[in-house]
Image (cartoon, rainbow, N blue to C red; front, side, top):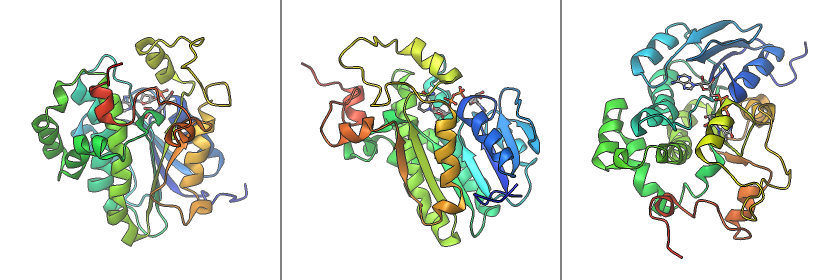
Length: 289
Ligand SMILES: NC(=O)c1ccc[n+]([C@@H]2O[C@H](COP(=O)([O-])OP(=O)(O)OC[C@H]3O[C@@H](n4cnc5c(N)ncnc54)[C@H](O)[C@@H]3O)[C@@H](O)[C@H]2O)c1
């Protein structure tokens, strides 16, 4: 195998590797010659990986136990796992989607990653508007908090955990985009790049859960999948993720890329109304009329 993207022999950690985008990412990395340490709460069926590791990302202790099984030097981290959290309390969804990645990136990986390393997260296209002041004010202090318990205390101090449970998804994904920016100062001096993708609708187990939670009338004039006219396949998210952590993205860091076939681009340019409003504030205090 040639070393086309520079992954040959690289130690890569992938979360969410049992299904959807994470599974596609792990499989493609194996094909590219990487040593893949695949993590998930569910059994992982990807041939050729170095190790399959059980983890519950809602538990700090479980994350510590999982990383005890990973080599002391890591080249690339792919933080893919996430839940819509329809059936979970607010804080559980937040732990899986945000706090786990914050803990891994701030407390575990700094000792294990060096020059040339790369981190890529998966957030969501519903997080458009995350950088607006009316969004940031709800989670900046949570992401800035120094530690897992401190971040939870801050969520509670802001009263965010009293919001309807499904709100946790949008909240956590917006906060993830801010985390990606915040991590630049931690990793930039070490020459470790940190980026993320914000996927649009993608075929996966997660997609079925969100269809149940948000049944969509596909004939409605408000529904627009982007000019592709279809949802994405998991590989179509794995490809940009793998690119971002590859040698071909060597000058890209701090990028939060919407992978939704132009949908968010039009909304942000004011060419199309957003489905959820302009900011997190709009989401929890919808405008009348
Ligand atoms: N599918 C979509 O339409 C869509 C759109 C935007 C963003 N996303 C995001 O993409 C990422 C990947 O999702 P997917 O679409 O591949 O869905 P998926 O449900 O197929 O995969 C998610 C994986 O995360 C794992 N997971 C869930 N809870 C966990 C926990 N507590 N500990 C460890 N692993 C856990 C699941 O077992 C599963 O294997 C998620 O972060 C999701 O929020 C998905």
